[in-house]
Length: 300
Image 1: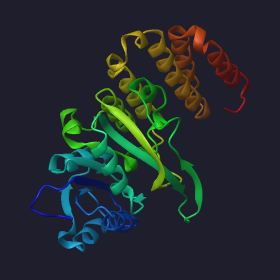
Image 2: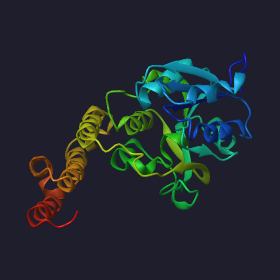
Image 3: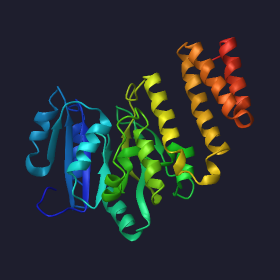
Image 4: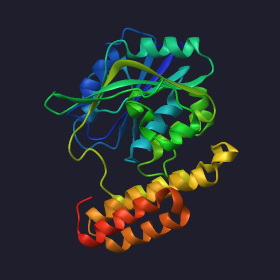
């Protein structure tokens, strides 16, 4: 809730043309069992009824309005206005279960070595049907090396994360130049500065809907590769050679498969050749398999 005293948690919701879903997100925050929060909604240049809906909540939330700048720009605007000890992010089409903040605040309060935490998320289709879970993996912790190698280790993605505000601000928030890789980039940088833990209880509901993920392959490829190069120095020294090259080659193979599916044979072959040069031992077989599929027209 908005108050003149500094809250424990600042909740940031970016919203662009979110009139169809924003009430569910806001109401799930207002229904939290942990009451000491401020709610900041960033209206990222919406042209629908988002602003009218936000006004209907009165002083229950702070509205920050800006020209459309994208998800990371909106989150960063919220971060700049945040006053809480912790930062929580919630996408406008997701929602929280009532104990989300209570469980996570207790965890970070009791574990000062942690930089951030997440929780298991339930995956839901637009019709309300549960279609899966994005669960904590392993023992629920992850080092910077592990986050680098397996981005899905941060269960629930941004809508699940609670992080220490001063650390996020010191790291500069989300990198707005890394299209499609901004979240992973911040998780890697946080993991390099402190621990991570995941609560195995389902505390978040993430909406899975067709078309909700960007399909701009070239921009996403550029962002993913730039993010991998940018954060290489954060890996332990013994992981910055062959290990990093294998990760980079794996990303190139992923985008080669995507290019194959789109019929862009030239881009696919270029990425495969580069992957083979970088990591012939660890990725040679994968490169050969994708190349064979490209030649024969097999489905990837």
